[in-house]
Length: 280
Picture (cartoon, rainbow, N blue to C red):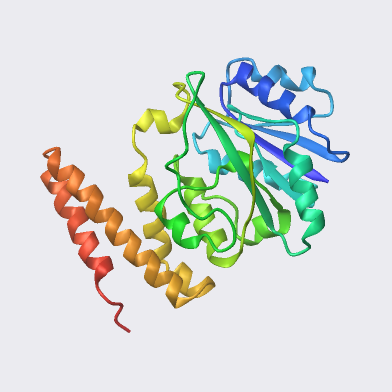
């Protein structure tokens, strides 16, 4: 069984389109779980429109990782798929991924290429040059390179990693894929099998304008907790500290240009700290 987790908040019309795109999949054993973060726009009517859909409503929190985790807690499937409620799956998405799982027994996660639309126009991804399969840890450190809506993964692996962070409003997916890629290889289908609709005012990334501060927060917490030393290798930790120092320096430079001297000084000091060798 494939369990499809759809977190949502006040996206009634977009949510219906997302669910319809799941219903078009060629998958004989599938369940759809909607985790509603306290919507007040009529989203509660969704179960009436789609009999058999599992709907769980919670008090509003604003944390998408928490909603994904709550949905996954109800999942009965061996495989988990996530679909943000403003994204769409193309009809062959699950079938293509299931075929790859069937042909490679050691596969734990498969993601796909995305078709990005911003205000109805296709966004070119020609400059997005990074490793997309195998050991992608070094690339995952630099950017959030795996879209949650593209993923099909083994449920046991998701739970073993502890799911998404529940206290990050943005970039919780970046932090999760750092933990995943430090411990696992990933498979990839080089075909756009989801449509990512960007640019609308309900996106949290649009709310903040930039999300690098959230990347720093997620990565810094992993480094400070010695997560990579405990769960991966010293080489993973060394590389994570190096990238964290670079991110802090770049962010601090941006703050300095904007006249935020105290913030610039703080991140410059952080950069120096993470560049320094670890003392036993």
